[in-house]
Length: 321
Image (tube, rainbow, N blue to C red):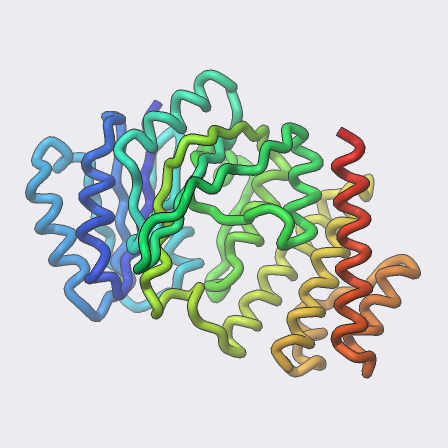
């Protein structure tokens, strides 16, 4: 089983060496490494090439694709998917890194379980050290797991630390949209899980760096709110078109209400938000919640009501196991 390791590169000269060493040192052998240089303004590519030269056994497995102009993370991830040839793929951000057996462990579980996606444990890296292992959600019902993803902020929607069959993307038309460079994970993972059978392991397979203060995670702006709303719109349009039975309508609306909550929290222009999101709530509860966040209700009152609805729904979901 060939695995494609997909890595965007931009502004990571302090971290790319560590990342590349961890990738080229993987115990699993049948790997291709695809890097996309999104016009990085620093020495990231020089450092990457220097590290690669120390691993001649990997030379034929490494490809570096250079963009003609800066495209952003959404477009870069899509180029990585379009360019890879593996049976499976995994995403690695270039300021993060992997333990040596990460790919081997994920592949072993995929082969054992026959799953379309395998989720692994991960550890956070900060200037103070490395955290304990964050284990993945142990929910075994793929439908319940997708419901929790759609709710937002219940389970992690990260794209990294997971192994996917490439056909999940290529066979189902799941693409990352250019311009959605923040919350792209949510727009992808919810659609992936509509089709995927999931398995998981508790072994740590990813070190997530919280050291890079210039990363998307550490920044917030109107541009990012727009990206977040566009990501939600992708999810809303997808489930409107594909969930004919309405199985996911309630968690979808909980997630869309969270989008309205974030608009209010960040003071984003409500007219622009409504234009970008185009969400028309269904049912008395969600019409009321939308009116609270869109209107003049105190934010704390609206948030308390929203969190209560979400809490009751998730509790009921877990009771149905």
